[in-house]
Image (cartoon, rainbow, N blue to C red; front, side):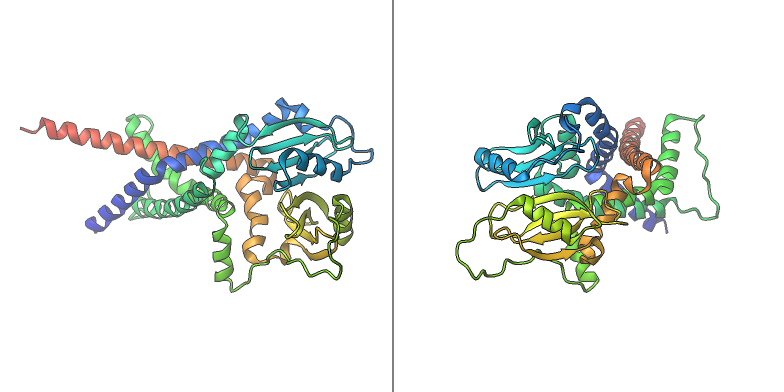
Length: 368
């Protein structure tokens, strides 16, 4: 029994020392994002608040798109984020060879209000660090595998804590020593908050790394819903469709939903996707979609979020669970607390290991 416990302890330490720094970073940056994003909006109203009200006619997207192609080239990937509230500005997210970032526009006049690069500003850099470790796709894969390490940390931690007799010791000794207090908080805090933290960690990794959705489809014996392929046209050389006309067609195809994103491919060989938030959809931005032919604006497919494959539909729940938006302000506070506790568990665990190692060295030096 002692040797088995020693094995669990070694595994717990190896996982913590090997990947604990990533968990600490993810927890701290996640909490800072929950606090920082609303503060960023308040500090920069010139970017996030529209100069004119939405009661007037909305600006046409086609001229804005033409200006963007003139500046960034025809191969740039562009995505409009449509205003969701009365005072919201219109966003144009750009991924081009020489620049990546967001241009903030007046939703009525189409005039530019400002722009920021992908890692320009504290909050943007923080988001990039939290979601990709500043390593793009490689960082997302590292975060996904770190999630597995956290699950093993939680499992081994619960095994090490499990009392021989219930209810066990739930008391935190604060009047003995700092080491004892940290040990008790690490042990009991990990057990109490472990499952809640696991929800935040697993949902974050699920959104960051797309192969996890593919695995869920395999487990559920489902086929991924892919964007429709463009059909052959009877007439040669059709002109590109008008973006505003496509948006109107998409709204007619899903009249009870609110349009949120217009995703434009870098060429006319891929379908245009317009995202909606349908009634009852948990995702704050919505993942219900209408796909259209960019050559003539024809509607190719209409899918509400609960009609997608399980791997894609799970994002509608995973995102608001991760950010806390699914349960309002209280859940957002809990999500922020999860991040703090996660980083605290990592820091306290590493400190306890270092202190115990130092004590053993001192004890070995005192031996005759």
